[in-house]
Length: 179
Ligand code: 2AM
Image (cartoon, rainbow, N blue to C red; front, side, top):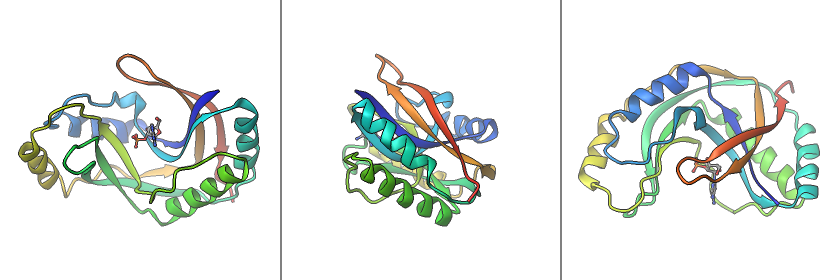
């Protein structure tokens, strides 16, 4: 079994910008900048033959490249915030690609959770108590945040290895957007 996901990698300029944003975070457990990405489909724990079929299906996905930038910040989890994230702008081609990949993953036998896709980059995964007022100030204070624009030329398959502190992500495959 392998814990895998499909994501868009961020260029250095976008990571640096988000690392600056992280300095103002009023919560702990910040994501290390090298781990930042835009998750497209979380495959979960999958047997290797299924992962191979998913890989073959991802190779058949044809979609054009596009550009994106981070915009604003938000939180998942309501009263018990589980993730503070940077939002993404210019999402139409991104959502189009995401839908294709989700269909491809399901076709390969992966059980994908039926959740609405909210494009984002996770900045921190606070555990335990959170100062809600400070968090609301952070979100309101960075609503106008805009990261550098970047070109998305491929999407990638990663294996996630859960560590005691940060997870480790290993690139397994890269799929160029040439469609
Ligand atoms: P997130 O950054 O938005 O939390 C690898 O675990 C990646 O898959 C994470 O970046 C995480 O996205 C995403 N993911 C989506 N659903 C997940 C789940 N149920 N458990 C763990 N990670 C999940």
